[in-house]
Image 1: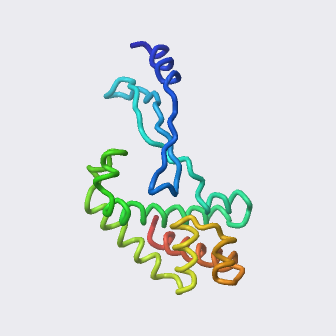
Image 2: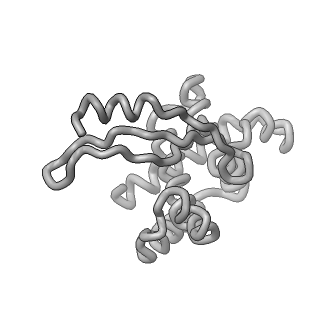
Length: 170
C-alpha cells in the first residue's frame, strides 16, 4: 500500500468519542498513520487518545502556575497513573491501550516515587495536590470546599514537588 493510500485510509475513518475512567474523562478512538522506521514499514494504528484537559494545564494556560510547576504536576500524575491506577485496573487497560506488558518494577518504582513526593508535602498541601492535580477538581471548587484561597497553597505545593523531582534527578 502506498503512502497516499495509507493517508486516505486514515483520514476516512471517523473518530468516536468514548467516556474513560467512569465518565470523568473523554477520549477518542483515533486511527493514525504510524511512519516507517528502520525496522518496520508504515502502518495504520488505532488507539484511544485522552482529550481531557487537566486542571494543571488549565491553570497554566491562565497563568496561575508556571512551567516548572506544570512539569512537577505532570510528573506526579504520571507516577500515580503508572504506579497505582494501572495496578488496580490492569485488566481493563490492557484491553484498551495494550499496557499489559508494563514492567512490574517500573510500576512499583513509580508508586514509590509518588509516595516519596507526597511525603515532601504538608497535610494541607497533600490534600490540594490529591484533589486538584491528581483528581482534576477545579481549584475554585476546592477553595470553596475548604473555605480558603487555595492558589498560594497549590503553588507552594507544586514548588515543593518541583524541588523534589529536581533533587531525585528527574
